[in-house]
Structure formats: C-alpha cells, structure tokens
Image (cartoon, helix red, strand yellow):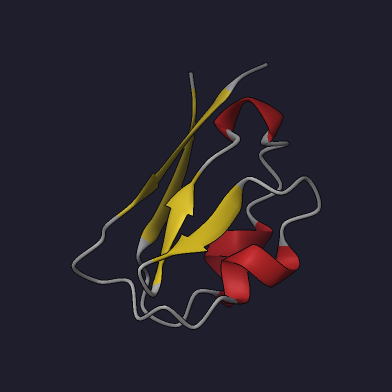
Length: 62
C-alpha cells in the first residue's frame, strides 16, 4: 500500500510537530517549513495529521 503525503505550504506554521511525530522520517524542515522528503516510507498512520495545529497535511492512499 502506498500513501501520498501533501503539505499546504501556505498553512504550515513550521512548528515541527509532524517532523517529531513521524516514525519513519517522512518530513524534514527546510526554510522554516515542513517538507516531504521520504514519501515512500509513509505508513499511513496519520499521526502527522493529528498533531498538525494548522491542518496543513493530507495523507491519501494511492
């Protein structure tokens, strides 16, 4: 099963919660914003969505 992870850069506040909670390192910070760097590693657990205070993330099955 594969997952598509998207971040709305306009909504991202750069609080790093998704970076810290992701068990597989899908995200990293670049220029004070979270970016997807390892989408293939996503487990679809949606922990990142749960901790994102700005609602900037979506995770969908592909």
